[in-house]
Every structure is written in C-alpha cells, then in structure tokens.
Amino acid sequence: MKRKIALLSAAGLITIFIVYLAQTRNGYFDSKVYYGAIQYWFRGDGGMVYDWLRPGTPYGFTYPPFAGLVMSPMAVLPFGAVVVIAVVATVLTTALLTWWFARDLILRMGWTVWFAYGIAVCLAISFEPVRETITFGQVNTLLLTLVAGDLLFGLSKNRKWAGVGIGLATAIKLTPGIFIVYLLVTRRWRAAATASGTAAGATLVAAAIFPDESREFWTSALWDTNRVGVLSYLSNQSERGFLARLPIPQVESKIWIVCVLLTLAFWAWRVAKAPDDVMGGLALTGIVGCLISPVTWIHHCVWLLPAIVRCVDLGTRNQKILGGAAYLIMTSRLTWVWEKRPRPPLELIGGNLYVWFSLALLIWTPIGTRRSAEVHEKDKILT
Image 1 (tube, rainbow, N blue to C red):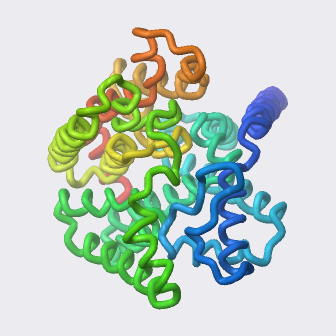
Image 2: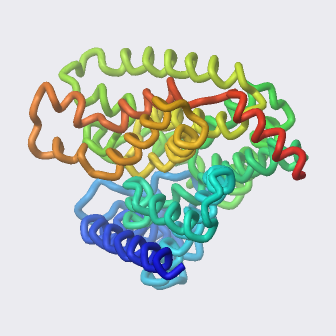
C-alpha cells in the first residue's frame, strides 16, 4: 500500500511538472483570446465578437455565436477565475473520460482500482494534446465528454435523449458534427435527428439573440482561415496541414478534397460494418474528425485518446504496440524538432507524426471484434 501511494504521488508530481513546463510555453493563450473577445462583445462599445483580434496577432473568436453565449460569464469574471475554471474543468473531464475509456481494462486485469486509475489519469493528463488543452485554456475535453457521454450512455443504451450531447457540442464548435454523420452511417436515425435538431435549435436561439453576429459568422468569419492561423504551421496535424507543408500550392486544395473523400469513404466502410460497437465508432470517428478538418491543432488531438486506449485494451499484439507507440511519441513532443529546423526528407515523417499515427489508428484500431461485442453485451446486461 505505501509503495503504491509513493508511486502514485511521484506520478502526480511528474505530471504537474510536465503541465507546468507546457504552461510556460502556452500561457493560456486561447483563453486570453476568448476572454478578450467576450469582454469586447459584452462590455465594449457595441462591436461584434468577430471584430476583436488579440493585439499584435491575427487571432480572434472563431466559434459560432452559441459558443459565445455559453462563454458569456467571462464578461463579468476576472481572467484568473476563468483560467482556474478552465483548468479544473479540463482535469475533471479528463479524469471522467479516463474512467469511461479504461475502466473495463482495469477491472478485467484485476489491478488495484484506485492505483491503476490514478496512474491512468496521470498518463492521460501528460498526453500532449491534453496538457496543451490545459495550458492553452481550450475546450477540447469538455466537447469530448459531451460526445462520449452521449454515445456511451445514450446511444449504446438506446436512450430517447441520445444525440443531445452531440448536438450541443456541434453548436459550440462545428467539428463534432462528424458524429452526426456517424449516426447516419450507422442508421441511428432517431439519434441523428435529435443531434441535428439540438444543434439547429441552439444555433437558432443564438441567432435570435445575436442576429448580426450570426450573420457575420455564417457568411464571413467561418470562411476566414486566417483567423485560426497559417495552415502550414507544424501544429496543424490534419491532412490539410500535411499537404500545406508540401511544395504543391497550385494543387494542394484539390488533392486535399480527394484525400478527405477517400478518408471518409474508408471510415464509413469500417464503422458501417460494426454499427453496434459504439466505443469503436467513437474511436474511429474521433480520428477521422481530426484528419479531415482543415485545421487540427495538436491540442485538438484529444479525440485520438479513445482509439489509443482501444488498441491497448482490445487489440492484437501489433495493435497494442501501435497504441503504445502512438501514446509515447505523441507525448514526447518529438514532432516539434522539425518546427524551426526543417530537415527534408525526414521532415515529411517527423513533421507529420500525428497525421501518420492518425491514419494508422484509423486503419488498425479494432472495431467489431468478438471481445468488443462481449463488452457491449455486458454493458447491456448491467443496465
């Protein structure tokens, strides 16, 4: 017991130190953007939230107006309180997600639950996308929690409210809308309608309250990629970012469209073959969302966590190796070696590590296996 407490304490201290180092680099940059935009919107001279840019940068508020409505308490809170709330929320949602994703593995292996779970939480927080989410002050784990909870406790148990979490996440940030496509591909018509209706309803509420902002977002701000940064920046680990870093500017956008269509077709084929494997669907859809989005900063890659755990939990020997390697390399910051010191041709590999691992996980993450079916049946019996 004492040894386990000492080991867990050491793991916790190492995790805190790793997050602290990330904080010295990132300094809650995204929270400062949100905070400045909301303050300007609600406490300025009547300007729209999309008019504000952080001084000295091209970065402004990029989310739909409904997200601004959700973040409106920032207008009255001091920035320090916003940071505390964001950090606590990210840590708590990461801990919750860790339990959802790793519980079966911990129980099946017969490990001491509090110790194994504590180590798993430390590993999850140390994962670069999660620690970047914490230290940028982002909302990624909150959105993943909405979607994962919806799928694991709504869809898999055939609840009438299944789809609400996906709809809310989509209304806050458009990229979770890929899960509505997942519901359609797997013929979950009621849940797809609920998700679409929830997203539309939330969007219309925001439009009724903020008509000018809604018009600006849907006609202008949404299409202005300069607001989120340069597509070729190394942190953009989507297929579009990969192509933008190649010397093919004349055909890059056309190739990207082809890549997106091929990626979506392969993903749809895999998830359609196993419509009842909801955890597998969550894993693969999180991956494809990262790959096809025009901009997938490294902190957005928290959506890869379900696939990594899935490989380690239910995979064959090679799949377990893939999951472990994906976690270790994505946690190591190895890809940043190529940020300021390009070294072709190795840069093609090293500067796109998240893209390559995302593709590998999309291809080899187990879905619809006998063991996953047994886990699904066990969950139905428990409910």
